[in-house]
Image (cartoon, rainbow, N blue to C red):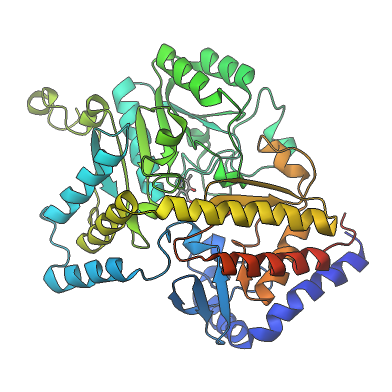
Length: 463
Ligand SMILES: Cc1ncc(COP(=O)(O)O)c(C=O)c1O
């Protein structure tokens, strides 16, 4: 990047900085106590994050008193708008009734019944507190079921923050090696090589290479874990027939097919992405929208697989080592279960999907139009209420395709829009953003005006 571009980049942050002096000070304070001044890495960005005081409906309010029209939506969970009155009531009622007990509570069982009723692949289900825990446990159960050790996953996919998931998430071309024979590359330090040796990456949307890799390692691969739409790379849609092909291949090879629906679950429809695409995996993980803004996650699937957690026959003879362990002090926390149950009931019974998808179509097709009007190279991808803007005019079908998108320009565009009070997700090109039930046509149209101004502001040379 030339010095001229760097100066431009500083300018793009300047307007947000002017509005957020309290956040700037708070950030200084926060960094003394916590790395990067945030609770989770994804919340950090340059020059500093703004700190939020309040959220209501479609809006966030920061500690400087600025209002933001929210399309970040807590990275997905806020599907009914912030603080939906009925969800809030359900939470309050549960708080008044009973906190954590470590003896099972009906509300958690009722929540699981609702999950199973709505999700085609789920006969039995267990709960967790985060998507990461859910994917970790699902992988273990699949290993237990198959007696195999390895997990296959698409390159570029994020399936959580545990060691088995943090493989081939972000890495350089050099580290990843050839596209048709990709290396396993751990994301960040502190991950044992022995773990990387058990993870097999394959290229999303490339049937031929996927098949070659899976057939070659079939005897060792317990599960394929895959997002139905790779929102962890922005918004990579499956090519026609890719999931059907993977369903058939995994079945033939005796590999458990896990759909990681942490992002898509209860977002892409009442039956999640699996209902939308008509493909039924063996296991499913979910989180985010399932808790309606409260901490909730889980995994489930065929009863025969889930019963690895307590195989009835083996239990007596081999008490100590015949089952796959699953536990957690906070699993099925009654407050989250109450919030999740109310959220799922609303999702199942009202016109939520119709509305958020209408808003999604208006927003994402509108973004493509305004980018085209400005004459900026942008490829806007979306499905329903979720999508992303890639700063490139190239087609995007795989993680490696996303390398063509201009990350700096995207971050600058995001900063310009944030300074005008609209949050198009966060400033990372590999993320995505959402619509929610409280969004109105007027809000979408205002967001598009802001987006257009922001596109104009970043319509200059980048390297
Ligand atoms: C597809 C997918 N799987 C797993 C996770 C991990 O979920 P959590 O952040 O709740 O641990 C995420 C988080 O964004 C995700 O997008």
